[in-house]
Image (cartoon, rainbow, N blue to C red; front, side):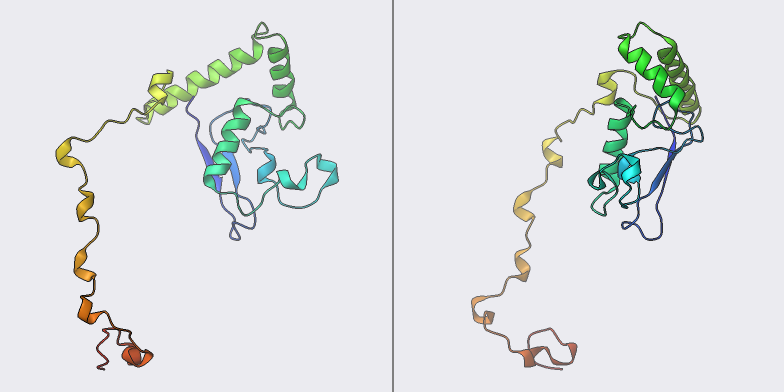
Length: 184
């Protein structure tokens, strides 16, 4: 499913969390009707006993775009139905999960949204992977002539000769001269 989302960073990032809003319609227990994502790691780092979240589950400045996106992907795959942003989607998801897929209402909504998102992506020229093989990037070895020659990685031109290998004093660097010859 191709989904468009915006991540907005506040001026005091990384001390405050960014926000994520889905621009594509997403029927999910943890996505509000307006597209805002509800996920613990993007909640401000305040102690709120009413929220049911531990402070360690909330935002901290060590989070980065990679950890945020990994958390979002995880949440999209495994919704938090204990603290839903969309109660109807949460009830429907639990009914679908508990019926082991026999209740098709949730599945049908998701399928329709995925098809609509895919068509929208194709209009934009985006190729949406549909199989596991499409998702996996296969790397190819470079031809021998394109391989990097690691023997040329270091440039020996900057090594000091044995006779230049003397201790330099602070006076050798006066007036911003770092040539090592003591002249200004």
